[in-house]
Image 1 (cartoon, rainbow, N blue to C red):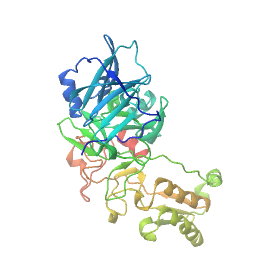
Image 2 (image 1 turned 90 degrees about the vertical axis):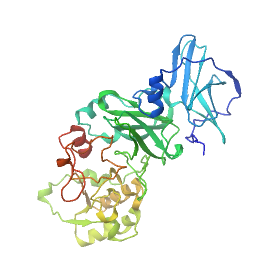
Image 3 (image 1 turned 180 degrees about the vertical axis):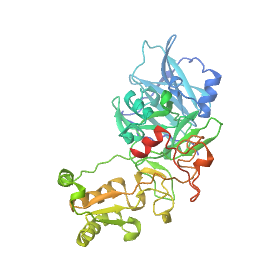
Image 4 (image 1 turned 120 degrees about the horizontal axis):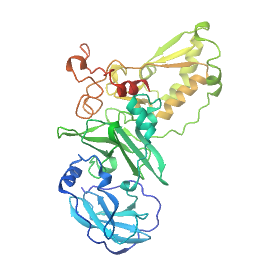
Length: 403
């Protein structure tokens, strides 16, 4: 099957007819070419996209299995020349880099889209500094997948911390889980990799394709994903909240009385088994009234973070920032919390910093080396549970847990 780019393009009207071929672009250094195609290049933006060269501007795109790739400038379409292996390039006699789009043609049709490799990084220096120091208090805003408008174009920014990786690529449902076309760039000593993909939006399923320094290549779910597929599926899901909270009164008054001076009784509940089969929104119809009628002031939710093994009751977490999809979406979970607050019930969330499972698609040896777990196997493996323990000595790991 041909690999298709089905990301949603920006509205651009009819695809313009071909106007002619480009000139020949300078070849890529063979070593750089090999690393780029292998998914082991730290700076694909230096090779792909548009760059000034003697005689004009060179354009280069990586689109595996494409029949043809053209560049569109000022409404005119110019065919790029195939360099084999999915690389297409050409030179136009221009004084400076223009606004442009790409038309990518596959056997089943063609599509006009923005070039991911014409954008500056969508993550700021302050974010990188705070990540490096392990004190980013809103880490979920910096890492993960975020729908956004960047340089006037809508899409999703993908960022991941993988300091030991030789290369990282985005693999998704629209690439048939092949990351070749979308290598990410390293943002220096922070260990963070970044790529803005135009047209990609909510609901997209994705993983990161890691190329380790040992030459191995594997897919990993996003540690900072805010939504995930329902188990046993393991992909991360691009999401953005549209929820409007109604708990203003609760938030305004909850700190008026010190906790140690007020009644405090907690009802602990495992949501999937309390009333089996109910979703977050259905639970919101019955749980607040039930807890209030019994006289409890708070509920304590046994872990709701995403986990692959249901009988673990949520204590072997693979998605620390994503509520389990078994009961609904992240906004559905917000609806439940909101309903409890509006009923005057506080919500306590169980948090699992003690360990994490060794599933090969999740946190374990995330970039090919011990990263979230200690490098010493004697300290890394939990003696009772056969899981990994966290490396609390690492600032980024502490930040990941505390944020």
